[in-house]
Image 1: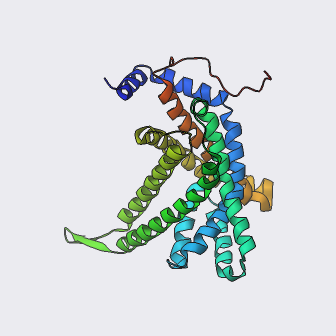
Image 2: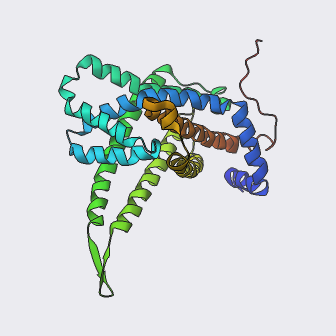
Image 3: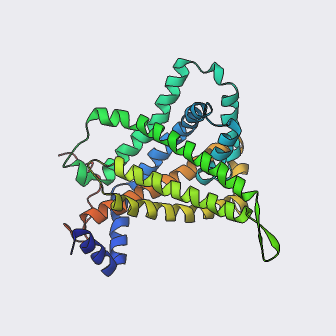
Length: 301
């Protein structure tokens, strides 16, 4: 029996113990505190990142189609606030000639902050890897900018595929003497495209961000876990904001920032929890499933 099969076998024998150990380890690593830091820097980074990517891709793609795609998938990250963010992007795109070299470099710097903080948070989740091997500082410095390029390429592909699926949705097929609209099929395929892109993005994060080499299968386990949890959380959040929330009354003009920050913190927590699942999965053969969580040590030697 392979090592991976042995791990899977032990988890299937004690699934609740494994989940409980993962939750305890996540709490010991101050996962929610790390998620707050990632969310804060992601809030600082998301607008500059999108501005840089959208301005770059507008030379190759129709700006209206690009902004429509951005708004559709921003709704996954910030429910109910994508229109406001899309409006700001459209304004920058309309006046992109005023963006000089200094502002461009500033936006690139702020775009990279979220990836830098995420790498540091992952180093806490995967502390057993960092203790064995550390990453060269030049790799850590260049990694965020490589991810910005990766996001730009991904947005380019998604925009092209979304335009093709929307074209399909405008058609119909004749079946049993009746015209059937393809709009429903197009909507389902667009949703499936978003979920698939989300899984691929998270898989790449789990492969690249932790120190050392992580297998694709392990990264997929964490990515699928985080994606499923986020889809459930996102739909609950959409329902809450649409029915029960009084956030617009309480925060007024700050509503967009508050909702985006809340969404990013929930997403960051689930992203880090997916990493914790991978970390516990890696350690299951060398340590008992149930063990005292190590966590972050703050005491002086």
